[in-house]
Amino acid sequence: MLFQFESLTDFMYMSGHGPYVWGSYIVTAIALGALVVLPLLKQRQSFIRLKRQQRIEAGQSQSLIIK
Picture 1: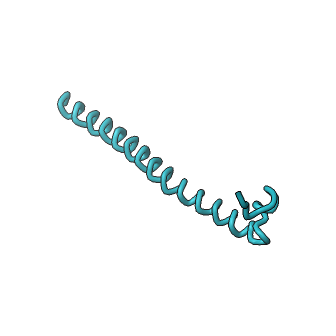
Picture 2: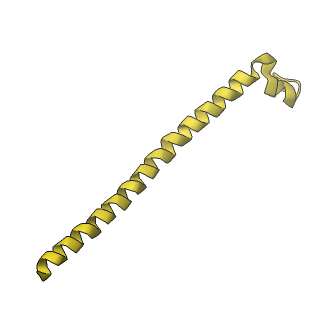
């Protein structure tokens, strides 16, 4: 089998294009990770906000019934 690169170092360097290629992979991985994590965090914050609002509204309705 014929390999494109002689060694692992040559593979990482990629004839001088390595920093651009690996940097692009890193930026892409970070962007894809953000596309997964950020909506999950927003959803969690929304659930917390809704639970807090429900507790507040439940407390107000109970105080109206008591009066």
